[in-house]
Image (cartoon, rainbow, N blue to C red):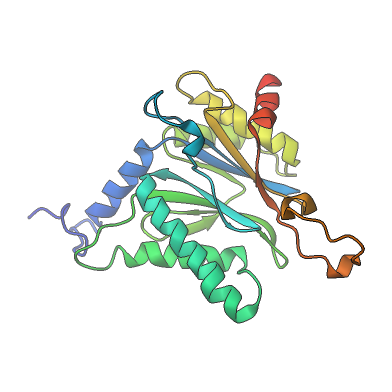
Length: 254
């Protein structure tokens, strides 16, 4: 009997074949990585267009979930898009509407993991063909970095990589990561050096996407509240993407 085509039937070795196939799809995806610094979190990924005729500016691999949280993927893009929509709905329509604040990073990760696990336990569906890295900040636990796999398992990390060359990238990160932690600037440099190890072709500001979750930046609100006391100012976002010029400056200094 072939167990590799059944999602809900365990093989005699205690494995679910479809989940292993989903992990294989992740390992065929382009590399993504995350590094937690003492003053922020960095997510970095390759961003390559399949054709020079495609509009590269329309591609987005790192997506914002809340003003203080974002995630990136390796694997199947359409599956990631579905998870992003569900994560945003859980954050904005469910949690914030009840508690008048965005969910802590761990709660959001649990919602994503719950959705991915649900797809491994029902007939007529397949597992999500992605692994995701979630970076966020909350008042209780500060900066956090999580990885969620197609099985629904999730783990907190100091630094990790998913997708192609993830094994060699983790080895590289183990050598570069300091137990005392890294500053955000050092983490960005380390992320680019790690990507460069397994990068195919030329690494430029057009083929790399970097996002950070760091200190609050009032300029990201898009408006000013002149004359208002500080305690009445709205909470500024901590998430932002680095511009092409900023990425180019970091690449030139490698």
